[in-house]
Image (cartoon, rainbow, N blue to C red; front, side, top):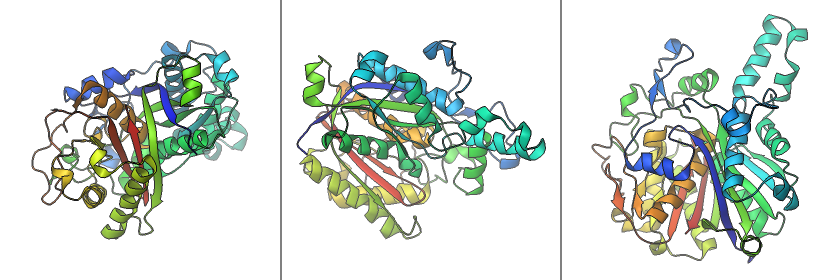
Length: 404
């Protein structure tokens, strides 16, 4: 239980770049990935914009062999895994030698493939349904394909916790290494942008309409904009990482996962679920709230969820929220669903390293009573610890504490 867990590599494929530094540079510039949707008709959904990964060419990362079994989600995750392993100085041989495993968070995984498999079976007949699509029609398909591609012989887990999936995967990976049950893990999340996901979010009433008001904390906000991406971090026990000469990019210090049984219908219950997570994560890290130097919030423009998250932070930090720097990257990335928590973590570590936190693009008039130090402009920060929070639209909540 006393093992320290360090981060030795980070890989991502996002709508704002495929390197941690390039992602944060884009965020610091206030550059938005939100753009008109191309490739399929969304008129019936009333949706015009999204934040997919534009121009993603998988062979740039993976070459041209054995790509056919991988669908969009798997290609994003396999590419992020390659970048994370490279960043940690690992190849397929060293991943095998360290019995590396994978903890992947995702909400839908291969929802496009599942829909296509069913569609073909219904319209053309069962005998015409694709066997290859069938193999990708399970929630752990991307995790399995990634392990096959990179020779990951350790545990292979898929965490499905709605919008909190990616952060929950980091929390799970932290525990597995701290408890000595894994030597090395790639942990994070991945999600594709597709018609089926848009349709689900639209019919659930979660999308911003009109889209210009999908601004976290803004009093005009009325929903989220769907994004896409994959992000994985290499987690190792600190002494083992040092023994192989790895550089620690950061350290995970504490985590907690909770649930709101009201699923957001009771504001007090929703806030309490995340408040408990934050307090438990800080307690596990051995830190007082005053030791937190940056909040990387999951705020995405959803009215109730943003409000519950802000209430939870205010309850824990008890008046200090007016000076605690807040970053909300989904203002520019959209909601990357399963990849969100991992992208938040990478961005927070980069912000700590650079000593500057991105502003929240488009933030105009903050909702009265939030009391958070959220701002449209970037701001200088100092210190070593960041709190990553994630709150879903289905009751899930998670908090992770990381340090330089």
